[in-house]
Length: 195
Image (cartoon, rainbow, N blue to C red):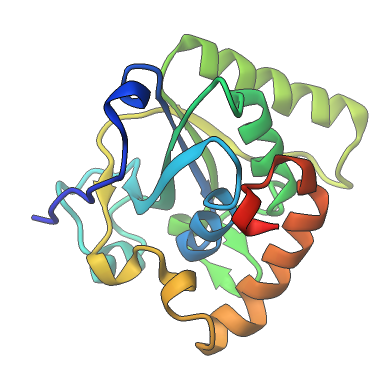
């Protein structure tokens, strides 16, 4: 069993924090993007939405467990709203491709929002509907919207992967350019140290 990842949450913050869970393909990318937003306290890479208890990365990569690579975001809604997190979600990947993001292919890379309550469900469904109505993408959005069941943190070497491995090939050629683009779009919502 993977041990829960510890976070630096102060006692004053803990009462006001909420969680959001998103899958936008490779969780290394998703985590790196969300970690830059002001109000995001923690972003943990992991697995959600499958049938096998406590899956390993190797098992999830087979595409047979039903899990998606995703990130559980702990955030302060006084600093960043769920709607803003949804904007980051839809702007950071292609929500029109089924089970694929770039070269990453399989159900584990699906576009998915795991909602934690009815308000998140409503906001996610509304955002998806409005973007489709507006023709924001050339194809319909296929993002899955499902309730959170059990989130399993990924193995420790996946946590803060981009921060710990910026020169690794995938990080340098896929995540870094994506992160640069993300920072330009969300410049006003970034943590001071991420600017």
